[in-house]
Image (cartoon, rainbow, N blue to C red; front, side):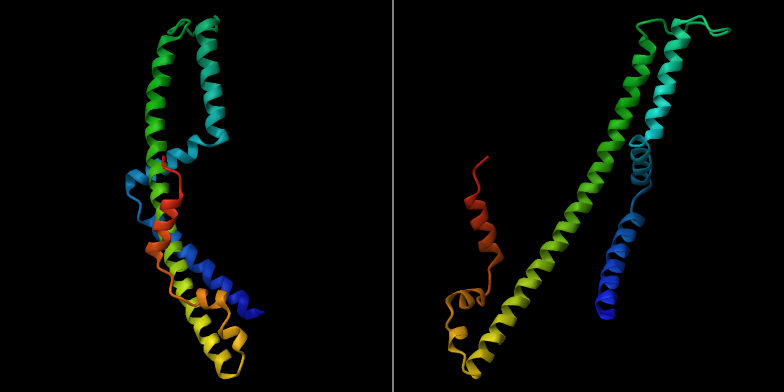
Length: 170
């Protein structure tokens, strides 16, 4: 079993290396967007805003010591600040989602390449097994229709077109 563990460990290290390379290749803007996006999605961000909004509203509605009302209800200045913040936060979030979408596309392409390679390997193995079965006198395996069909080369283009033709039009 040590081989399986090493094999699994090798795959994990390859995946980790790919992720590290992807993260290292980010631009400064993408890194900033990721940092802002991570902070915006945190409980600390929510707590900070609760405290900020609460203090703003209290200062502008109650008479608290030396603080004067600078934005009376319905708080038009707060509305403006929050709207501007929302524009920037939305921009950072969309930037981050775009980068994550590109990464997802890269993973999908890699998975597709591995699956195509696997299909070719399995087809080759089935052909070898059929040849072995023929040589050792197992005609039921060499003439089995399902195995014969699976032993044929699969055209990825044909599969893609068949799927496209089978899906309902949008």
